[in-house]
Length: 339
Image 1 (cartoon, rainbow, N blue to C red):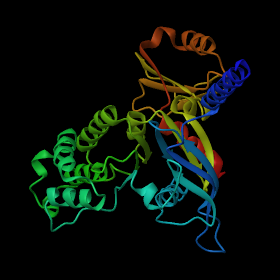
Image 2 (cartoon, rainbow, N blue to C red):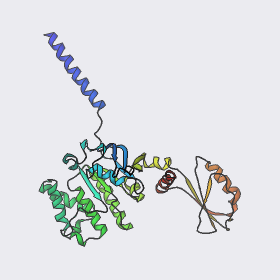
Image 3 (cartoon, rainbow, N blue to C red):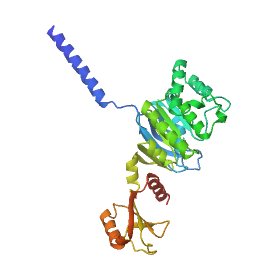
Image 4 (tube, rainbow, N blue to C red):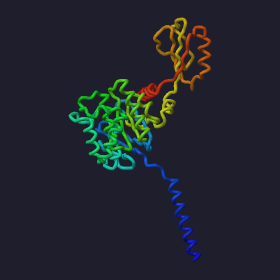
């Protein structure tokens, strides 16, 4: 009897050990994964996407950046199954891209293309989207007003799509993509063509929505104020290949964490001014202004201030200091890569 109790005890101890080991080794399934994605449209042309791999975890908000022709929109189309890769694979929450299992967890917005029907009212479009994704009617009745409130689309529900402004339509496009409560959303240039006020409103609505639902977001945009407002991480692509993958703050450092100094002078600045090595003089709007730019890794800040104090000390009326923005840092990175 004691022998069988001993076996039983050892068996359950072994099972507990395996469970613990499995929990230690398990990691969340990526919300979006791309493995060696390659897509070529013509044999004589370079691939639009070449050997591109990355993973995005559930809840992450990631910017997918690159110049025109870098392969961003092609990659988005590969992730949602509009295009099929020549090589490699993509998945949404572990399900092969383009399959019904993947698409039911996916929301998609193309800024330049509409998924709304112009002859229908906004409410009719949203209800049709809910039916398409088999959303329970009672659930849809609760969800549509909630999303409409977050995105400021409530007053638009009874209007026909053709009557909407571009900003109003884009709000409704995003609501439409969220009706079925996707766990992943791909936004391709969602603020394209919008004025400043419309952009600010849409960004604020997206931030509010992400706090509510913690959905994974992949954003492509040429407006880097969108990126800095909505994303923590960025993936940069160029010529279809990955050039960088990391935090936005790391991207700025990686591509040139340069400092700017703007001086307002009490006297006109000399047209010819001998500068120390590694300090650049930038264009100024007035002879009473001097704009300098430098890399603190190449010339220490105390050296720069010592030069300013020695050469211009009594002439300085005001001084302001900042650093290059993300957009400028990335632009310089691409310019250097193109040379």
